[in-house]
Image 1 (cartoon, rainbow, N blue to C red):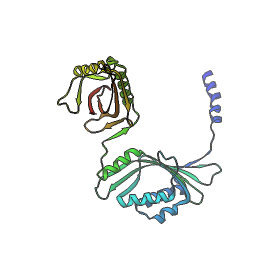
Image 2 (image 1 turned 90 degrees about the vertical axis):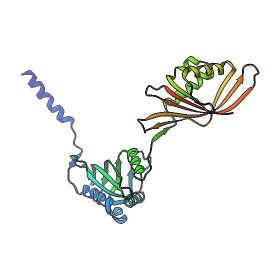
Image 3 (image 1 turned 120 degrees about the horizontal axis):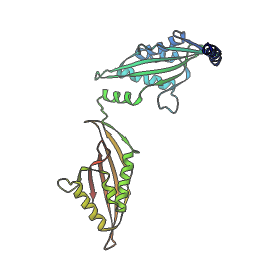
Image 4 (image 1 turned 90 degrees about the horizontal axis):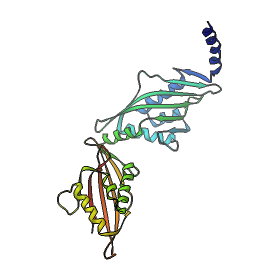
Length: 297
């Protein structure tokens, strides 16, 4: 009985904590404007699209630092219509929400759609989920659109539909680049045990102008000879390394780097300067399993 009384006393507190700031509709004239904009995108005209927006409307896309304009939106629509057959459909079983906040005459519309575009030349399909938020003012005009979609995936599908296939991505900052810099530092300091620790036991080594490949034991001997014959080893970076993820054949990481190798001969004190290009491939354990050296004498 006491438990029931306590529960009854708590319920009013929950009710008081709630605050209603507006009304949510599943159907509303504001969303009729948005659905009309989709039909215009599919097969309408510039004039029809402009008629649905205010002149100063702001259109936001993923990653945008500044909103787009209605002029840009029109140009984008015309490009899609020129190159693709478009359909924008509801993402079942989702349904739109239209929110009208207290004190406002306009309304926000929220929906979840599927964007499908078939390339008119290749027949390839570009497809993905689209979530939009639109503010429709009291005059039935869209003043703001906020689009949410996977920009990279859609861009890749567009490229592929035109016969341009992306096989990977390029990074100028990556843990494998940090690892490469640590490897270079270890060699410069003569810490060959540390250097060897970055390589897989079955790693392969190649060098321009030398036939065949070396194994890790043979490469270790080369490092030792290099350290023994020099009093100073300084690798000066040229440009910056690229870490590339290749998507084909299961995926793989490769780091390309460019250096000036400045070595001081231990006996004569003579300094040499040679240009060096290195390629390092990494296995699934994050170890270097292939090194290719190009050095211009």
